[in-house]
Amino acid sequence: MTAKPQDVLGFWTAAGPDKWFAKSDAFDDAIRLKFEPVHLAAARGKYDAWAADASTGAEGALALLILLDQFPRNLYRDSGHAFATDGKARSIAAVAIAAGHDRQVAPELRRFFYLPYEHSESLADQETSIALFEGLLKDTGDADSLKWAIAHRDIIARFGRFPHRNKALGRSTTAAEQTFLDEGGFAG
Image (tube, rainbow, N blue to C red; front, top):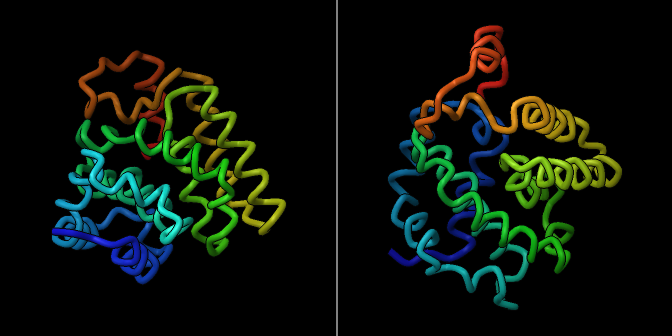
């Protein structure tokens, strides 16, 4: 299957914020049906040109980020593969942000350039996320995205990783992490 950036963006924007961050088997299945082969091809680099192609510009980079950072979280929920393309997404985000692509899309979509940093288990990436979401707040008034970025950063500052990923990644959970999870700590 060959895809175009607008295939991804059309699907994603039609779904909207109510589906983007909610757990839904039906939405996960819709992504799987339409985009799992596209995600896998993107993971192998087949669509890397989207991020650099002048004809697709910001939309190409955004579509690639959704394929690599958002779709795997739906496709491979509760599996280590959900995070397998995070590093690639961060690399693409860095180049796209440096090119100003994040400021060339609709305000509600701008956060998807920043989420690869928020999803990282690196404290430095988390600090980058905070700075990016502070800029988004200043430009758009989106305080909710900054709130979530701070919550993610605080977890990494406390534990050095996201405890809710431990099972999927085959990691042991410390007593402090288990207490955090048992007390309703962020579950991602």
